[in-house]
Length: 120
Length: 120
DNA sequence: TTTACATCTTCAAATTTTTGCAGATATTAG
DNA sequence: CTAATATCTGCAAAAATTTGAAGATGTAAA
Image (tube, rainbow over all chains, first blue to last red; front, side, top):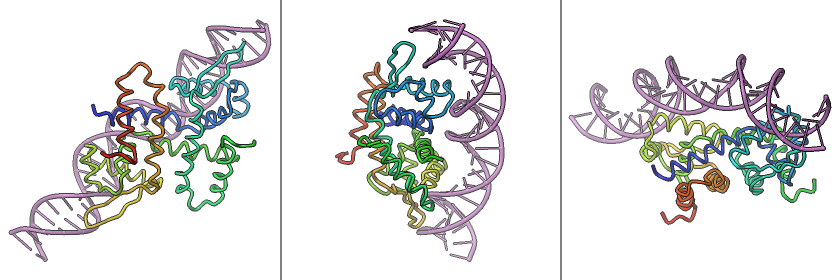
């Protein structure tokens, strides 16, 4: 089995993991460092069980790691560069919103928000 | 509706488009420039109809564009940087193959193969 | 021009699986 | 016991992949 097929499969799997808005937002929430599950559940306004499920999937694929402290569990990105790399994908969604200038503005805004050097 | 939710959705959609091994390989085949459908169908060893359908999806999301010439249709990446960005994702699959050193080797090999400055 | 063949796209349809999600129930710690 | 997470269960909806056949277009030979 040629390497490129194997690797393409692995990549495809990771992309599938990332192909959910909630999980993308979770990763971006972890950009600045550790956050506990409860905080994430509040910030994303999702049922705690949902957040847990998403985190479990990210954990299985080793995109995040946990640290327990008392009854709180703090998550952080295994490789912090992941958050930046994802933002890099914004470049390629611009073609999708040719006729929606308001969406374009959203992209600009979020790119700033999801930047390492954000003052937010 | 907050921008970050909208943008996260758009990103998630792109990831879904990319979450198929065939489509990843197609994009990498287009890294060096235009290729016609028949060649792609031979290189990937897939039925022509499937290649067409994959390309149609990529076209809808404006990741590729076509150019007709006689009975051939040549496709190229709308934004050539896409191929590189996808390869950038290799960084994050390493955690997945902790116990498979052979797969690690595949990653190294393919990263070289799918690099802009590849001599291959 | 008619025939044939090559390239590419689209349709139809079966298949198969997913996949997201909520609510209840565990588990663990204080 | 209560609070914080995790997992389980099952449904619902949605969907994506895939194949083969048929259609469209283009070229070139007879």
